[in-house]
Image 1 (cartoon, rainbow, N blue to C red):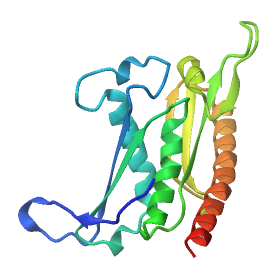
Image 2 (image 1 turned 90 degrees about the horizontal axis):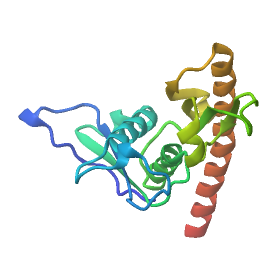
Image 3 (image 1 turned 135 degrees about the vertical axis):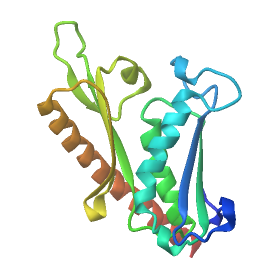
Image 4 (image 1 turned 180 degrees about the vertical axis):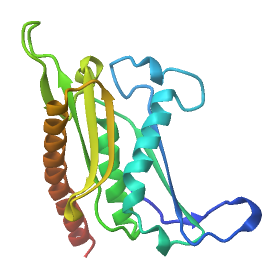
Amino acid sequence: MRSHGPRQALRGGGEFATEGQVTAELRFAAFSTNVYDEARAGGRGPSAAEVTASSVLQRAIAPAVLVQQYPKSSIDIYVHVLADDGSAVQAAVCAASLALANAGIQCCGLVAAASVGLVQGGSAAAAAELRVDLTAAEQQVATASVSVAMLPALVRVSSVEHAGVMAPKDVSKALALAAQATAVMHSVMKQALLEDAAAVE
């Protein structure tokens, strides 16, 4: 995934903006998953799931971009998901952060994201358990989930999304698991950038 730098923002009134803006659009290909999601079905415009995913992506990435360096500009992020076996939005956050770095957009750090969900165990009698990076099937049956986007190098949270009902103790555990997962992903992302830079040289 690559980006091509900022463009001039199209603002009404011709006023000068001292800071740039970050927009994001995430779309799912019709064949991206085998799990039917009614929220993705629809007409030509973005589905409810895509509108939500785009908003989550924008909220996760925007705090990392040094928008003051891009006055009167718009940095647009477009993600088209071709295959989704779960946690696609979190993967999109990581990919978008890498694309911004690759394009030379000034950011205060890489953004990594991870999801943790409360999923029933293998049997009806088994207690529900927390699982990291839910698959598409697990997302369908999860009773609650937490998504965290972080800048691990700065130990800063850029966004937290929560759905469903989860006990306070489970929320604490889920946030800790998500933070650990983002730290692991951050290391992988850094290595990918280093390898890409070395290949260019």
